[in-house]
Length: 142
Ligand SMILES: [Fe+2]
Ligand SMILES: [Fe+2]
View (cartoon, rainbow, N blue to C red):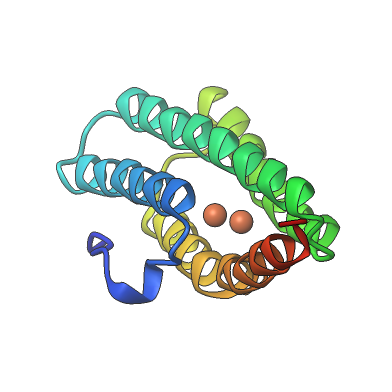
């Protein structure tokens, strides 16, 4: 499983969000590298837990920013976040109970989700955020 390389397509122009996306991708890359090194399941599970924590923090700040700006797509976007968290948590439970192991398809799913979500739903939000912020600026009394 190859690492995700940061590229312009992932840069959304919202500094806090971009920074958190970089961190999230770093955590994913660390997990994928540990998988390639054939680290024991316990270590992989721990790294997945770190990735999950990082995702929770990031999703919360993204959703808070959406609420502040009055973004109409918030509910739909939150559902995408919740869907991933639910899947990863369910998987993590199976992992700790020894019913599952981290496999290539699991990493592929995570990579696919991260890239698809940032380039899709997050990019849509970034575009709307710039517009909403500009509108707010114009509406301000001078
Ligand atoms: Fe998002
Ligand atoms: Fe995001």
